Length: 201
Image (cartoon, rainbow, N blue to C red):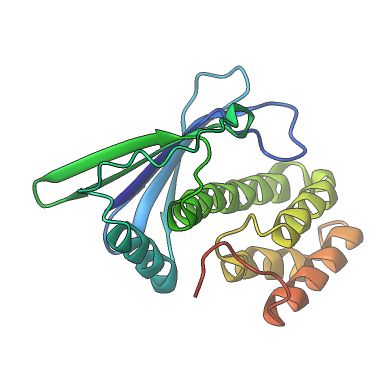
């Protein structure tokens, strides 16, 4: 199973910081995302289910890097603390290992690092979009602008996982027309595979 703790990562365009982000994955791709927002001590706990291709890539990266048995800490000599610290960990059989870093020059470890960040960003977008749709529909245009920017910057692990939520917005006549039209445009781009993901095929 893979696991990642992402400390103090701000969401792009967000005033309040997101802290203590933790992703815990089982081998079948089910898992949980936990995080805190702003000044609140409340822990938000979300269930998630990764696509089989994403989970397979995570397993491959842990395997080919020899993560569980390697002595390398993977941290670059250059520190980028402003990016937020990430603790990558894995458990298999009787072996457990974790490594804390904020940037790595190891291409495969950096991909793993980027995937976990993108999973967190993806699930937070789903959470925020759902909340806006239910309680603050006038916030949806802003939420969708930020989502599209993250898609363009390859910050979403599985763009296709956004489709159901976006289609729901597009078909809901009670929501602002600008949000419904924007959701439709994003759906069309995802369907045409206009957005790349940090998960390499």
